[in-house]
Image 1 (cartoon, rainbow over the protein chains, first blue to last red):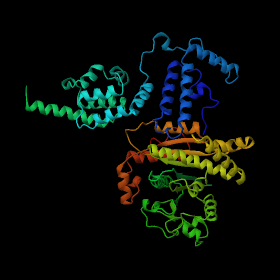
Image 2 (tube, each protein chain N blue to C red; image 1 turned 180 degrees about the vertical axis):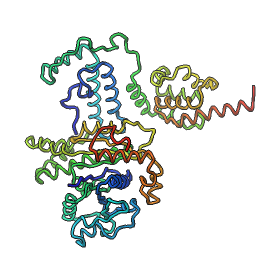
Image 3 (cartoon, rainbow over the protein chains, first blue to last red; image 1 turned 90 degrees about the horizontal axis):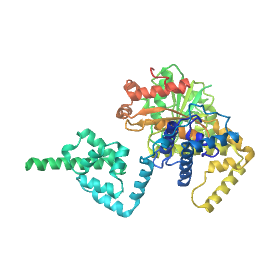
Length: 223
Length: 305
């Protein structure tokens, strides 16, 4: 099987040398998701060692090409060593990386993913999760416990799922009257569960059972 | 010369026979003379998918010389222009074909006077399946968008390469390279090295030649039983990965959407594309058939067929 041997950073990310920062970033994200150990296309194709090397190459490619100075030096090296034809970046198109102007404050989805994955490997965390997920009804408190157990912040979920923190808090605090209609709630819960790498169906079913149980109790005892 | 397309792909139950029958019927409908050869030896049932009783004449007649050539072993189906060479009536041990018989079949397949010859292969990666796959330089790999099936497709591609390398290299050389590899494997313990890469690299003089030979292959990929909730770019990802990490040309032909009526059609012994010609899955099959026939890779072709 061919690896990345002999490919330059542009070839690794499959982009032309004239790519803009955004094209580089998109290519980087695509490559990471393709070579991620959970990708159903590639999971069986590489050993862990091979995969780590591939991911490392992709990371290096991105780190170099997303930094104006490093990229310019790298391009110069490619041209000097004759690996590419001389290429002159057009004047109006300097590589603009927004990271220069605005500091990067986002959450790295991939890092979060591997962090949660690692947490889930720990026996005590697993036991705690199993205990919660065995319940038939899952309340907001249970979800919160799940989230805390894998060490994810509510703002991180907000960043990745784009669900507002007020809705996320309403879910976790059982403020049912403030929740969106069922269809939306379902999809929110699904995204929430995915970030925590927990069975989405279980979370949806469990939470909806809590809601209907609460409704029944309210009907019997109107206060 | 006929265009020969072996249809394989590591796993059982992914729809190889179903797709063989459907593509054959479509080519025939579009005016081509087509023969399907059931090479799922010992488990052949292509005739049932075509709504036929098991034909008396078939591969058996060719092997026991009741017909004088493979062409005469082909029987007409209910579809004009579409013929079948069945292996249903071959003797019980047909799955363990003699080497000489296999060569005879392969040789005859290459000379069949048809426009299209589709070979319905059995599951797995046994020598028969691989050798029949190697009859042509182009083959179609069917898999379902599931990890197990994709994993088996990779294994299938690798074993095809391995078999091809074995055919091209001198027996002694091949054996000694393998012996070295396995002893290295014992020593290094972890991470089995890529055997194909080692075989390719053992002789620098021949390396380019062998790589070149492997690059002559064209694999076409089809995802069957594709459900709507899946990532629609999966096929492109698959094509991309194969082109990048294997040595041949890979072309993704398309997805065939899952439809439970395909199952019904098999039960009723009526070809799905005839029973339900206006479904999405039938449209998918037509698009794929058109793409094979036109040899055009573009996405836009075949949309209004």
